[in-house]
Length: 104
Image 1 (spheres, rainbow, N blue to C red):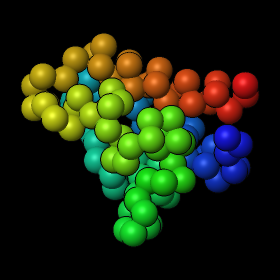
Image 2 (image 1 turned 90 degrees about the vertical axis):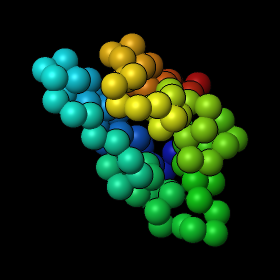
Image 3 (image 1 turned 180 degrees about the horizontal axis):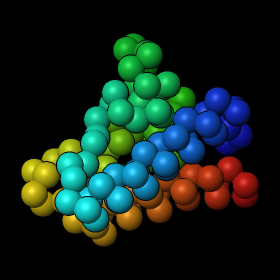
Image 4 (image 1 turned 90 degrees about the horizontal axis):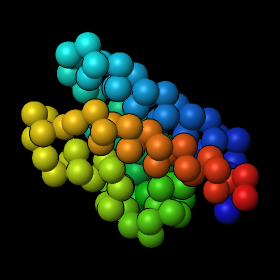
C-alpha cells in the first residue's frame, strides 16, 4: 500500500520518537509512550473515533487496531520496570520495516 507524504512523515516521527526512547532508556530516564506521544496515533487513532487506526500503516500490517500484536503491545501490557532495551529496539525495527514494505 502506498503511503501519503503525510503518513510517511508521521512514520518517520514515530521512528524518531522510539529512537529517542532508546536513548532515554540507556541513560536511565523514563520512556515516553501513549497515543498522544505517537505521531501515527495522533494522525490515525485520536482523529477518528468511529474507525480508529484503519488508515495507519501499523493497522495495514497487522489488521488490528491500537498496535495489537506489535512490540508496542508488550509495553502496553507490562509495567515499565519490565521494559527491556530489546523491546524498544524491536519496536524501532518494526516501524522501520513499514518503510521497507512501502518500497517493495
